Length: 113
Length: 117
Image (tube, rainbow over all chains, first blue to last red):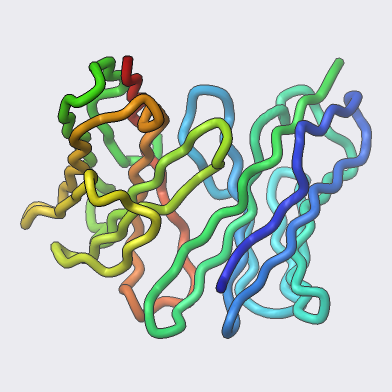
C-alpha cells in the first residue's frame, strides 16, 4: 500500500553542519510530497512541499527535491542551527479513489552548539 | 498560531473510562483529520471528515469514534480506555476537497495529551 519511510533518528549534529534526512515513498499514482516540522510542545507545521516530479521545495534554508525515479524526497540544509532542533516528518497526499494523507514516523534532530 | 483549536490540552483518566476530545478547525476549512502520536508508533492516521461526512478511515479502533458537526467542529470519542491509549491526539484541518486539490497543507492544532492510568 501507500507509505512513507524516513530514516530513524535521533540525528545529532553540531551547529553549522550539513543535514540530510532521507525520505522515500511508495504510492499508486502521483502524490504530492511534504516535510512538516514539530517543535517541542507544538503541533506539526508545514516546512516545504513539492507537487510534481523534479519540483524543489524550499523554506528557511531547507530544501527537498521530488525525485520520481528514486521515489525520494530527501530533506537537506547546508548549515543547521540550534533552533532547528525538532522532529521532522515526511508526508504524502494522494487521491487514488480515496484521499490519503500519510506521514512517516518522524526523525528527531538535535543540534548542539 | 495555526488557527486550529483543540481542547482539552491535557487529560488524565483511568482505564475503562470514556473521554471526548474536541477540535475546532480553521475558519473556512471543511476537512478535519485526527491523528494519534505515540512514542513508539509515530503519527498514525485515525479518521478524516469532510463537511460532516466521513471520508477516510485509518487505523482507528472500534472503541474510538468521531463525528463532525454542522458547524464543522469535530469530536473524537475514546471509550473503554486502556493504558496503551495514552498518547497525543492531533487534529488537523484543510480546505482541500476530498477528491479535489492534489496538494494541500494540513494545519495542526497543538494536540490533546491523554494519559490513562
